[in-house]
Image (cartoon, rainbow, N blue to C red; front, side, top):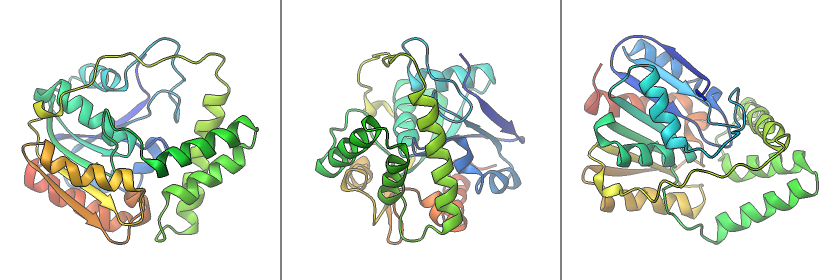
Length: 254
């Protein structure tokens, strides 16, 4: 199954991978700026998000991304990933390092990371609300957890819509399809330069991952944004877009 995606522009390819609080629409603020900068820009919905259906057989998000690149005949790409999208980006870069030219990670997860107490508490609270049928409560929990103080009402409504849609799609699924176990990727095989961004108001897990990545990758730097929560590209889109463009201009010039 091909992931639902958008593609536009010419030039070096940039693939945008979304957080699981959102879908590919989270990149609306960055899309025109990347096109204007001279890139070919691609964004996709993971399975069970946006317009991509829930899986009907075991699957791997990293393999889905590679299959998408193959279908678009893109040999090498810059990956920009938020949260879970950043985790998938790390896995793609580790499994197929020749396919990834650079990595910009926004509050990324990491393959093999064991959740800390705050992340476990969030997961437990979300599960309780969903099991009780309180989908609206679960949506609002996500907004409180993942959006920092800079997010305005319009941004909160945009994230609310994307998260509610994801819950509706996933809860309507008739069976639980497991992920495909490809084994834990070796991050030491990543060759791409990496910018690991974290947010001051994010959960400790993601701040710790971003700070740790420069010790695991050969060419990585960490930048913490003092104003950001978990979704800086939506909380301060202009400022975050400028950071991404500056990093791409240095490591993946158009």
